[in-house]
Image (tube, rainbow, N blue to C red; front, side, top):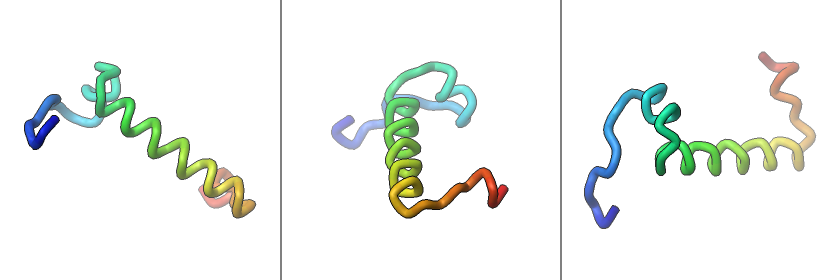
Length: 47
């Protein structure tokens, strides 16, 4: 927030807290999934 740290923790802690980190992570993940869908990529097959 304006160059200041607003949340601290491990990935798991920040995801569990449900704050801004979680919001940003979920937004990025949804855009990644949408891009893969548009390109016809099935990442489950690649795993």
